[in-house]
Image 1: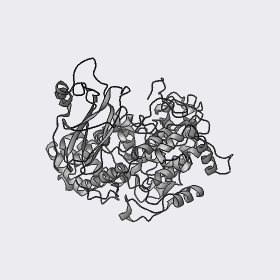
Image 2 (image 1 turned 90 degrees about the vertical axis):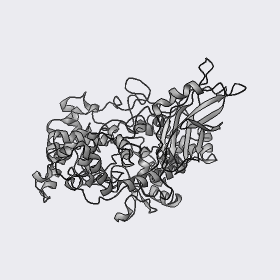
Image 3 (image 1 turned 30 degrees about the horizontal axis):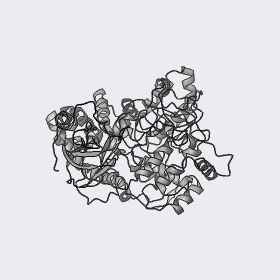
Image 4 (image 1 turned 120 degrees about the horizontal axis):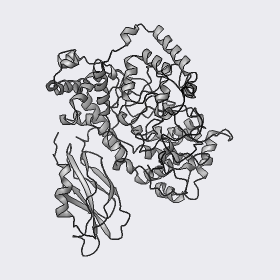
Length: 602
């Protein structure tokens, strides 16, 4: 792959002397500059105009330190990039009038991207696979002892991992998939979706928005809680720790999954897959975009999605998903007093009629407002949460400096004797299926939640380093504790309940032991009995199931898992900030302008 090396950290210093005039009249700097790859030769650039644009005539676009274009808009598409090449971009504002060549702003933030290697991939596979057989460490490194592998051998061993699991091809599939999505983006529809996602007008009592449990600045579109707090929060503008409805047991029975990369899922939505496609289980279809009919828990929504939404619409799964939080009594609203949940949804849509008309006109071209349009805009916004650029993927592409030796050892363990790749395979790190092992259960859905075996959809591990707490009930606060659970499931379950680990979770640390047991409810008896049944029906003894990880091995695995986080997915990045609307109350004054428990804005 052809790569242009670029000293990014030197760029501002080397350019400011030649491009920026140090004077009191310097123009304000463009904000939240982002760059997104659209193809092998196209990179889309966008930014926010400064608050004061009175003296700004336009913007100059720079690639690798050289000016390539200028525009009066706040976006630009570079169509002259070269395939498989790394580029660094920034923009500067320039002034009106005679001083336009002297009066400019400081450079914006710098964004670095690598174009697709080619455009031969149709972008219809997300990188998910059914595992092709767990590799043995001895076959990769000539030894079964990870500690016997020298630092000098690590890259050779990792090269064999990448080849065995076909990770390079999987990553190319995922990158092409993401680029296809980004080419299809409609900025106006995303903007409408962003406003709707943060609007408390979509909830029955005007006290909850989608962002109340899925905020971009909190865990890649989550809330950081074990069990989410939806309606009736004491302070409806607080998200995360400190958000409470005053009850010991939260009314929402599951942990809020991240929004990041939800557009990568091609088969199902929700922990229990209650929105999914009706399709075969052939391995050749895993990770492949399908036009199969959608199945949902509600006949009205199922009919609507299969009759009024094209089966080629890339957002249809997300559209179907968007119908259900608004009609969940604990999350956003209770439709039981209406003729049907769908009638309730259309009632919610009528609330937006006046103040929102101009926003719908901008996105759709006319003033019609119904819930299907709301769902389509919400889906477009959620689909813009695409964060797949992480150190491990950079390593797969050939940059051996992007991973530490500890991370490489963790990857070797992950893909061999630890058995993690049995379930978290492919670059999506999930085959989009449900599978054990059994997790501790707490809260109002502690008993028989989801299905009889309490098995939930295996999550993707992308960005897992910032999405704690973990599990369908958020029962583990750290990756290390998750790994300990897989090390010895029976011992972990018994320890969780015996040591009242619920009280160790950040959301419940202020409670008494008795209150934490109240949160567990019937979960302990149910889960331990189910685990005993699973063990009795297994042809493997307990000793065979226990993995006997050492503390070093747990550290290796956790360190590798953290290398799967895209730096742009972290709160405070420009890519996250552009997903948050300005704190202006929204079109109708019902915007969720989030704060933490101390009142600090997010």
